Image (cartoon, rainbow, N blue to C red; front, side, top):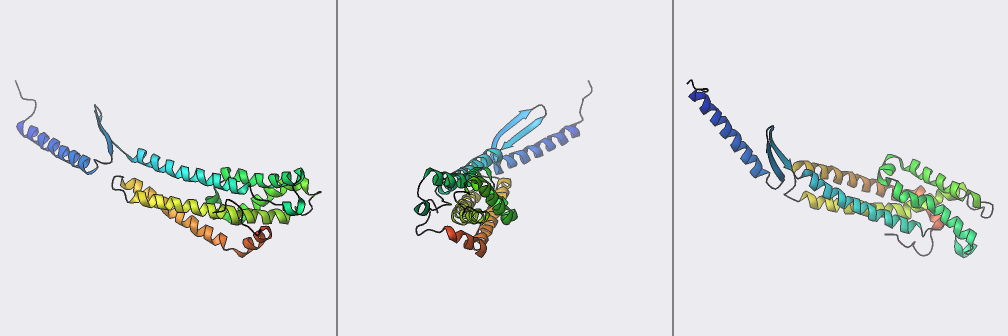
Amino acid sequence: MKELLEPHVIISLAVIIGSLSIVAITFIIVLRDKISGVFVSRTGVEIRTNDIPDWSKIAAETDLIDENNCKSIRKATARLMILDPEEHGTSAETMLAIREANLPLIYAAFENHHTRELKADADAYLEDKAQDIAEAVQIFQTHFPELSVETSDAFACHWLKKILLPNLRRACGEKIAYYTSQLRRSDISKTVKEMLTECRIKNVDYIACIDQLAMRHDIGEKSSIFIRHRPERGEP
């Protein structure tokens, strides 16, 4: 019976298989901390890494930072007052006007991607919020003439400077610290580290933008008409 394979062919196949085995074993040893499973089937060998689980945990942690930040912004915003109760009293109409002025900003705490929108066009962002406030308090202007468009604009600046920017800066700082700690790990892949580096750089850029806005004279001047003797509760 004729041999199906010549001896030299068998030797060549053995060398190739051996070489591939060495490469595969070396690959598994090098990435052993990042491999979650090795599966062999008719179609070949499938090696699964920890990239997805690792990134899911990282995303969950940063989502928690964002969630806590939204709560802080909401709570601090609810304490803002577009009308001074010491001047106007605490009648139902006064308190309702204050509540209605705050509502668009409270909604924004959960609906907006603040850092991205501020970095893209801070003036457009402020204008949008001022318009929302003006529309919300329009029905109270007959009783409170001071609730003008200019007042709504100033109130939006006050919210930005006293509530939004400090909380955003704190959240970005927390993310940077977290990304930095994850970059020190030796058990995550290069791909995940590249993603972490990009996220860290993005938040550093956000802080630079926040600091520039915090120093803007026009925003500070408009905000100053709402400055009380005591700071708003909830400010960082």
